[in-house]
Image (cartoon, helix red, strand yellow):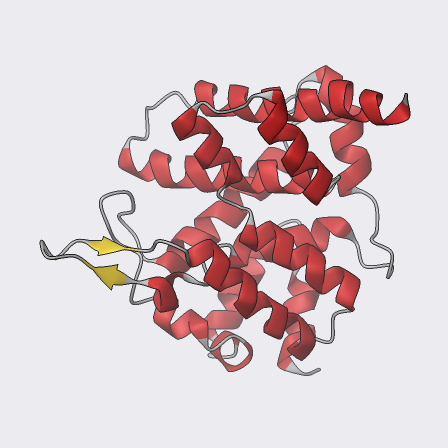
Length: 235
C-alpha cells in the first residue's frame, strides 16, 4: 500500500490522530506531505506553546473526542450535524474522513506564511490562504476527486471563520448569509474544525479555561444556518 493510501486509511479509525502519529513515527508522513517537516519547526508564538504539527494532532484528537460525546452538539442541531458528518460527497468519499484530514491539515500553510517582526515575534498571517493552495495540490497527489479536494480546500481555507466571528463579534445576517451562500453545508464542518482549533490552543495555555463562549458562537452560527438561512431558501 502506498503512503498516500496509508494516510487515507488512517482516517477510517476513531483514533485517526494516533494512527497519523504512528505513520509519522515510521518516517512516512513527510514523504507524502513535505510541509510536515517544516510544521515541526514553526508555530510557537504568543498564542501557541507547541509547534504546528503537535497542535494539529491535538486538534484532531479533540475533534475525535467530541464526536464520542453524545451531548456535545445541542439537541436542536444534533440531527443536522450528524446527517452531514455521516454522509458522503458527490464522489462517494465519506465527509467525516475528509473533515478529519482537513482538521489535521488546517495549519499546513503556517511554514510558508511565517514572518518575524522587528521584536522577533513570529506571525502567520494568511496561513489559511496558503494552506488552501497546498491542499489543492495534495488532493491530487492523494488521488482524491476534484469534489473531495475542493471540500478539503474549504475546510483549510476557511478554518479561521469562527475565530474571526469570535474576535470581531460580527455575526450579523449579511455576513453570515454571505458565508452560507459560499460554503453551503460545509459551514458545519468548518465550525466544528474552528471550535476544536481554538480549544486545542487555549487548553494548553489555560487548562481550566471555560470555552463556553466559543461554543456559543459556533452554535449561534449553526442555528442561523439550519433554522433561518435554510428556511429562507426553501420559501
